[in-house]
Amino acid sequence: MRKKVEIAQLANGIRIVHLQTPLAAAYCGLTINTGTRDELDNEHGLAHFLEHLLFKGTKKRKGYHINNRLESVGGELNAFTGKEETVIHAAILSSDFAKALDLIADVSFNSIFPEAEIRKEREVIFDEINSYKDSPSELIFDDFEEYIFPNCSLGRNILGDKKSLKHFYSIDLHRFVSRNYSTEQMVISSVGKISFKRVVKLVERYFSSFSIQPKQQDRIPPPAYKPFCKTINKNTYQTHCVIGNRAYQLADERSAALTLLMNILGGPLSNSRLNTSLREKYGLAYNVEASYTPYQDTGLFNIYFGTSKAALDNSINAVMAELKKLRTDKLTTLQLHRAKKQMIGQLIIANESPEQLMLTMGKSLLSLNRIDTIEESLAKIHAVTPEMLFDIANELFDINQLSTLTYM
Image (tube, rainbow, N blue to C red; front, side, top):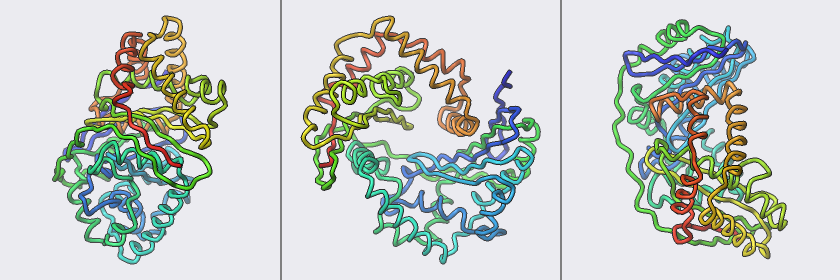
């Protein structure tokens, strides 16, 4: 039987959440409430750039020693940047757990950002940006979000642009850390064959010396939403299209119901309504999906498909037909039962991944100040009614509130 998730807090505000398991491997991470959204207008791409530079040298380690510290014992250190968080995480044997925490603490608080490494890493990210621009099926999501949240850091893409990246130096990175890396807005999450008592002791050893540093700026709410319909000529062989709307924030009580609704509409499995219609019934698209992304104070949902230029109008009509069905026809008891069963199966399978569980615990405690058990998560799905889905569909799928972005 799985042990209960346990939570503690250091005097400097850093919180700890741990789940003890019988697995030989351990996973741990530091989730920081700082991302692209916290950049100033002249800092586009700085949060992601900083994440890269964390591994290039600290007050006591060279970049080579950082990379080799865990890899030499079969482990891995990694990081990623989101719109509202930065995560530095590791996968190691439980016996090497202390090494991972020591390294995460070092790169998070003691990085020195050498100018020589900044110049090299700038070129690496330029290449990453070029690669991304060659992937219109990915790029269109960033452009869509920029139009959904116009003139707002929340709408900017995470990688930044070459113009802004050319002007980032060590002083800019230190200033960003000083302004945003608050110990009161950090969570260390872990899963592994380690007692909670030992986890707390190790976190205290490596993180308690860092003083409280409040975050120095509040996040600016996004501007009022205005639906749009835009076409951008990309000269691509395939036409790419995203249709969507703003949606509920992370803490909204309707989030679970909307997640279920998006799974019904265009989830990852082949029996979603959009896949059944566009791909299986009409043969219009190879890939079609729907997703919901919640943020601290807002959110968005989008539907994506790629098709031929000749089939674009028919594809959009097919999507609109599925949205209309959800606005006009309530799900039957049997339809909802099947949808819930499928969603519950996906949640349970995802919950069996210890690394994903570690990341989810960190994000949940940081953003919602709680950790839902799997039973509590399933209860929220069970509580969804046909009326709830019908009301959400009529609010968010209103044709007059939908926005469309197309790459031709």
